[in-house]
Length: 190
Image (cartoon, rainbow, N blue to C red; front, top):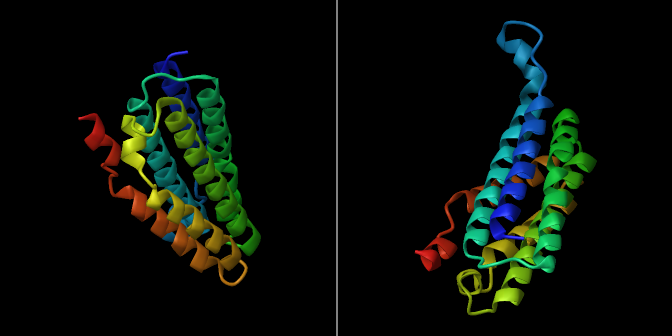
């Protein structure tokens, strides 16, 4: 399989996940600002999840751009990542509809931890196949941001039972950290 086919399949799965999330947002009943109030938690979780999926899509694109060819291990680790990303709409809907209750807040973090872990696993499988001196291997180095993200998500899971808004803040901060474009891979490709 070519990397282009893997990338196209992954793009489709991520696009479907984004589409499913927006379909969970119900049309407000009423024509005033008060009609929007019940949808605010779900809208906020949607925005955060949309940004996070966009970050994964962007990073995945750059990662595959730096990849010369794929093997079976890369294909399976990519499916592993897509599995966890496909759960983002369910976790998003539950978290938003629960008004940020502790368990759904923690489950949302769990999906983010596993997505981050799966992304790192995919990176490692590509580097293992292409070598640590490959474009991707040289670009990611020790991957401080990736490790910090997973640690932050793990902390947020525990803090969800203390105060869910602390967790929500951590999720938003991790997204903000990745929202700033990561030039490590781009600089190696250009």
